[in-house]
Image (tube, rainbow, N blue to C red; front, side, top):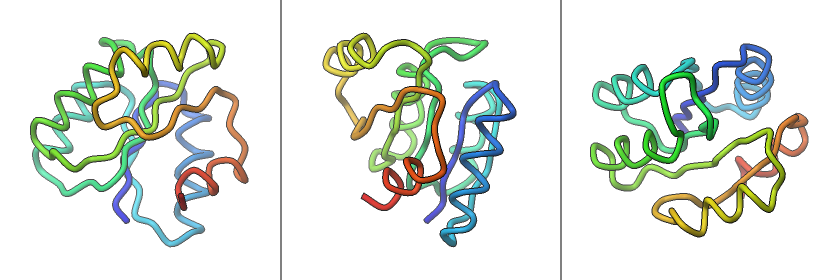
Length: 116
């Protein structure tokens, strides 16, 4: 599976990419929404992990922009905010989102989400 991780936090990117590479996935990490959209324009991506609050905008909008390019792209939204707020945002913007996760993530939780 080709996975894109979009998060400004290098620690989050390292944890997610390391875990997914151990599972045999190809992973690319970027730190903002523009890089994410540019990557999807040029490469096939099956699944994306996207921080809700990116330095250059809203993670939901980044997912929508990427899904205009790759309509079947799956999205896992990440946030440091409480799960209730994240779920509320997801319900208002459900297109393409199949999982929400609050930070900090563990390797085990990342593996579970990726293999579902």
